[in-house]
Amino acid sequence: MIRPDPSELQELVRELHQQRTAWLPSGLGTRLHWGAPVAPDCLVLSTARLDRVVEHCGGDFTISVEAGLPLQELQQRLARQGQWLALDWPWGGGASAAGSIGGLVARGMAGGYRQRYYGVRDQVIGLKLMRADGVRAMAGGRVVKNVAGYDLMRLFTGSWGSLGLITELTLRTLPLPPCRRGLLVWGPVPQLDALVNRLLASSLTPERIDWWSPVLAERLGSGGGGQLGGPGEAAVLVALASVDAPALEEQLGWIERQTPLPTRRLDAEALAALLAALSEQNAGHPVETAAAGSGEHWLLRLGVRPDRVAELLDEPALRPVAVDLAAGTGLGLAWAEATTLTAAQVAELRRRCRALGGELTLLLQPPNSSLPAWEDAPSRPLIEAVKRAFDPLGQLAPGRLPGVAPAAAQAAAETTAAQSGISR
Image (cartoon, rainbow, N blue to C red):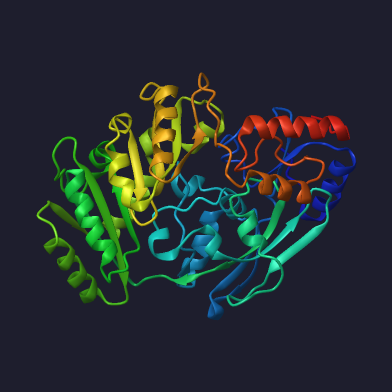
């Protein structure tokens, strides 16, 4: 991995372009093994030394940062000003292994906070990047209401380094809520589904409504007062925020009156600890182990229509698996030991997700599995056209192009490399 000084970055990228060398844009390198594999001899170029806060306009609730700034450091700086970036920590390791803000945007995966604050791309209002040939470009700006240039922010969010190197980001910040409360509810999936539907149809605006599979509910819900649910029961976590504590208590009371199921109230400290545990323990699979390529477990990104989440949780293959799904979006993660699931079961889960109006992405899989990380999207021709426009030599992240099945992406990258003489 190369960690160039900011003053050397552009010249280095130009040299790689002239030498027709394949390379992979990276942040801090914590999750290089997620998603589709790239060529093993692909050079990794890290933005770890691009770690400055460029400008924080607290009154406008925007902040401009270099892409290599660690997410943990960014949140700490904002907290000192009473603000925060409304995003979850990435899976595995918690805040200490959250990675860089550029890497977070490149993966584009939002967690439960999307219920109220929308996704990663909705937090990005400006972007600076470097193309594969070393040419700098920018889009958006440093104010929330900005329509300058092409909407590269949405294009690059979730691009997995396949289109260019993100160098700087301008982000939307929010005031830290002065009051937070939570409610855990246990029970059979059908009764929980009825409660979730009432919540989604109500005038309440929770920060998050998270579905937990029975395995995850048992693992996390037993703390802070003992397990309330029975064996094999799922759970729903509702998190609320407001400027007024009595209003939160009233909302919690209303939710409790909507269901006969057992509940546990969480104060701000208990809620924060539970969310930290959700990010950090994850079946004991720290992200450092995953990044080292041990490959001893599954990490799946699941997506279905929000009204079909209960059906997905009822799938037999998911019963022994830890699953965390956002009720309002139908998106979430599932993780398990390598021996818990077979490749055939995961392939069937993928078919089931498609039938329920969504998809399944393989972020990590055991070494004896060769399933594609993602499948061809209906818009594959358009995706490939955009790729050619930004990276005509196919130098960036060869084989890793979201929306194009890895085998097809790798074949295209090898063809481009052969035609242009790129060193692999």
